[in-house]
Image (tube, rainbow, N blue to C red; front, side):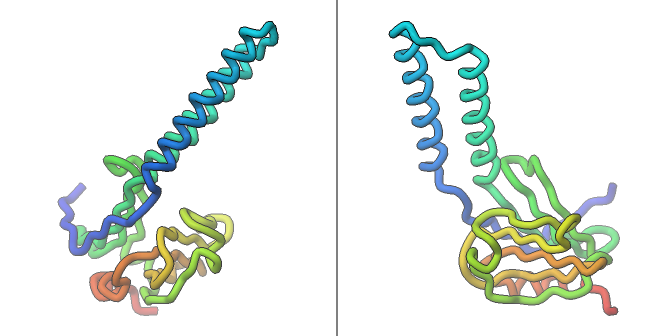
Length: 170
């Protein structure tokens, strides 16, 4: 795979660490309730306790990986693309190659319009998805196959200009 260089990058503001702290406190509180309850002769099966702990660990992990979201315009050997990296080290990645992008524009987007905060929708099933981390202008990508992707970034017009050479002319 060829070398790529970052043309434009922005780290999005995401979940507050207080949320994860709250989840940890809730987990500890649940474990204490189970232990105290079982010390009074009533017992919750070990399986149920395991499920409770697993659910809270899974939720905490999902919040942890959402703390960091990087949106980048990347110059690759085949041209420019939009790359989104979720979580520390970019555990989850999403990439829109230049040949896949028909148009890049700016549009106001609110969490109410998109269905809430976070990643909403599905490009595969609904042909529409949005990554919403703030209220305001969003970068809107019209993609091949009638699909549309929205991402709220500071200064989406900078992303439109940076992607300019990548956008195919239909």
